[in-house]
Length: 273
Ligand SMILES: O=C(O)CCC(=O)C(=O)O
Ligand SMILES: [Fe+2]
Image 1 (spheres, helix red, strand yellow):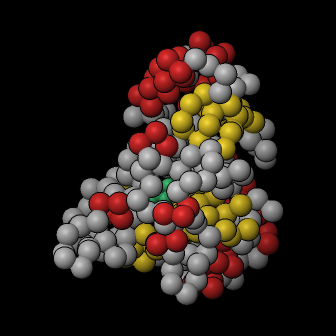
Image 2 (cartoon, protein in one colour; image 1 turned 90 degrees about the vertical axis):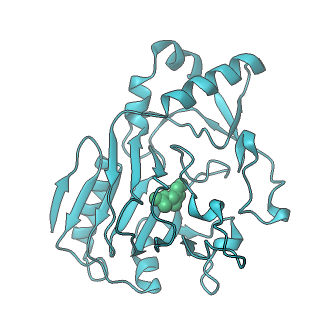
Image 3 (cartoon, protein in one colour; image 1 turned 135 degrees about the vertical axis):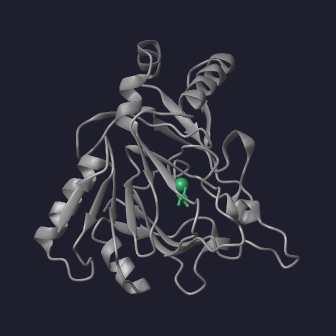
């Protein structure tokens, strides 16, 4: 097994088969993942059960609330990039640009947000379609001290779709779930490092602040998230298995590939046991 560090975050792992990897090899992968926020294991040939079995080594696999994009027979699997053309031939932007509306974390609308998200590349376009990652640790460190102090001990209110109510992928009955609260400055449960937890697409407000200050801080942090520090840009190859630590990372899809080409992933959300 070879591990190549790709920059301040991100590692590329080759020379291993996740289907047959022993516990010692997995421990090394897991440690690298904690250290690097996001890892790619390249050149994997997986069936759905293989992908789920490997994913379960990280935690419990949990079906995504967007039921319309679940695999028809395997609800734990979300399909990214399938059915992006409607019956009338028009492009469904909610599917094509899923995850491309800025750096975010997954599942901040859940009581316990996902530990990790993992994607397996089934089909990759010949241009565009990269995924960007960045680090919640570096974001916290780079935040102006004034904001670090203002946010310490404070909670954000989060809801699927956020202030824009961008919830087209949810079934109508799933749109009324109440917001949940999460501390905005957190300590990672495994690494012990301090991080900024923020999601511009799902945050509604910061608890305990006047609306004007809350909105101003959210706008300032959203601007900061346009180019957060410590980024890694993943250029996909078919057979890549990429997992990010969703507790301390942000990500976004580039959303820029030729729509007539396929870009398809299997995706799982993973929770802590
Ligand atoms: O398609 C991608 O590159 C990432 C999409 C995304 O945000 C996600 O799967 O959570
Ligand atoms: Fe995402």
